[in-house]
Amino acid sequence: MISDPAILVINCGSSSVKFALFADEESPRRLWAGALERIGLADGRFRATDESGDTVVDETQNIPDHAGALRMLLDRLARHPSGVCPIAVGHRVVHGGADCDCSLPVDEALLTRLRRLIPLAPLHLPHNLAGIAAVRRARPDLPQVACFDTAFHHGLPRLAQLTGLPRAFADAGIHRYGFHGLSYEYVMTDLQHRHGPNVAKERIVVAHLGNGASMAAIRDGRSVDTTMGFSTLGGLPMGTRSGDLDPGIVLYLLMEKAMTAEQVQHLLYEQSGLLGVSGLSRDMRELLARSDSVAATEAIGFFCYQARKHLAALTASLGGLDRLVFTGGIGANAPAIRAKICDRLAYLGVEIDERRNAGGERTISADKSPVPIEAFPTDEELMIARHVRHVCADLPMAREA
Image (cartoon, rainbow, N blue to C red; front, side, top):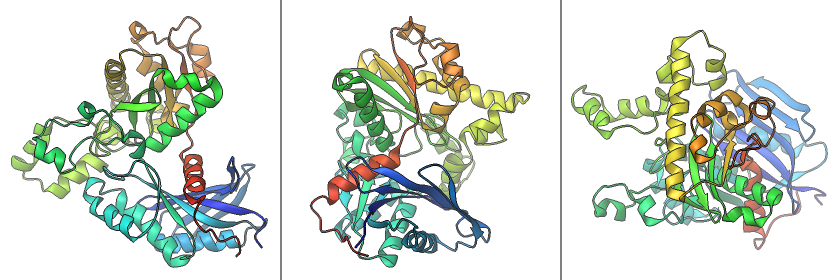
């Protein structure tokens, strides 16, 4: 018998598989976390830490593909010293389409529907599906659950969904969906845990800032607007993604510069944003360290300027602002960026305390600030583990190896 059943959480990217292993408990406890990186290259890396943060795996080896990565991971977990073993797998799936408002067990009908959605998230969904397929091949007995980044925004008001295109296009599924929903859901859960259930009634803007970045306006615990829309390309500039762009630029590139659709896609998703504006790096930490570079300074300034504009716009959707939260890799860890974004927003009641902000405290607002400002890490993996427990509660789950 398995003494310690566990839930495996997987987030598949183009060249990596990030994972976390949680104890199958009412409050899931992270046992392992790590990643298999540089998939497809001879110098792939498999690294993992335990719940104490100690390194338990750090190996360099050839990881040929996602299937090989998942086999390697499942084999290592089978030899876990404490005897834990996955009884279910949860996947972060970027797009669930118009019909997915919650996490769902993976079956053939769902896979067919997700394959049809690939054109809506061409750089994400294929890898998400590859992870599901790899687990199926390696452990067909394991229940799998798809957890969607779009689900939190499923109830967006109709006006926030529209794009301005003719109605027939909206009827065909071309409308604003929103992303980073698992992160926003975690933030709201954490706020209610710390401040009580009434915090959900507040008008809140959450800024999920990282290599992928977006903001959401949340009222009564629900998303009422968000900066990302139809795709993961829109809204804020990101590590390599352009963010909002005059559509006339795309037409110009296609018609006057004779670029192909594939070239434009590569340009907007992989060559733009912080990397494109700076010409140096997509990594905000590296750009902040290059204060001597005009290009790096300009890229940082552009990012913060656009973030400030979007933040202010979202307060119009809410009719005011009662709380501001920064999360994500940049949002939780870059005081200088938070300060630049909040600069000139005192008219909204947003005032940062420089000492608290620089010191990495959770509450970074000044005592006189009418709007509380918080900064803390998100935990999408924990959110997925919770969803897996909920979805699998009524499913037959193997408790034996």
